[in-house]
Image (cartoon, rainbow, N blue to C red):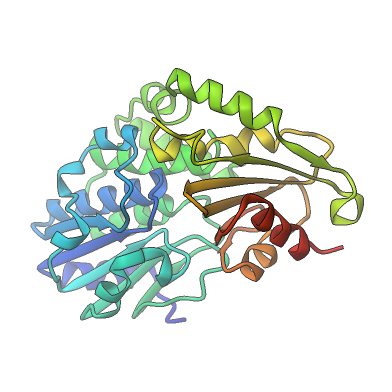
Length: 320
């Protein structure tokens, strides 16, 4: 790992004429908010900036209204730049089809907050103590000397409010960051509603079916308990892919289980799996054993096969 500071990253960005910023596949509010927030700051400095992410999925609906979204281009349209930045990706593989583009960059920067990130850039700005990548990007924008505008703050607030679960598991520092962003002009009520509390009616029906078919295994984890739900490709028909991302926050509320999992079939036989623990179970080793990574209490991975096969592999990977 080539550990970097916000100041050294800012220096590299300041020296560049052009910057390419890459978000991870199946982008969430933290990766997109971080990219656009940083992009807007660099535009203020006169840099040529383009942002992109890999994958067939479209940008989630609420994120299309973020300031700076005009900086987004298709993955095949991303131009080569003086500095290439990855935001919120725990591994270079999370960049998908843009992995090779990143590796070929003249100067590469990784900005991230995942504890499982071992570093993969020329400059690795990784802070596992940060609740979100957006808060690290705020440090970089400060080091750049850019005034925190309402537009930049709105992008960063999107990452902060979602990655802290509307501050349910935020560290003390995040409340200070939130205050600063709100004071810069963020409409917190509007963006909290759009990002966290707005779904199509079909989402309610999907959640009802998933919860009805959920499984509680009180013997798992040596009696600590596991609860899991399965979201099939058919159940997601007619909805944006990102509508299944919030299901884990409902399943995890079962008080009888320390660990919660949601299996999401993103395509026939293709799955992404979200893991969450409540107290002292570290889910990173579980996710790593299955090819993924993340945080101590929140991690994930991808898998393929029939539902029972995918579930079985998770059960086999759980510690006693």
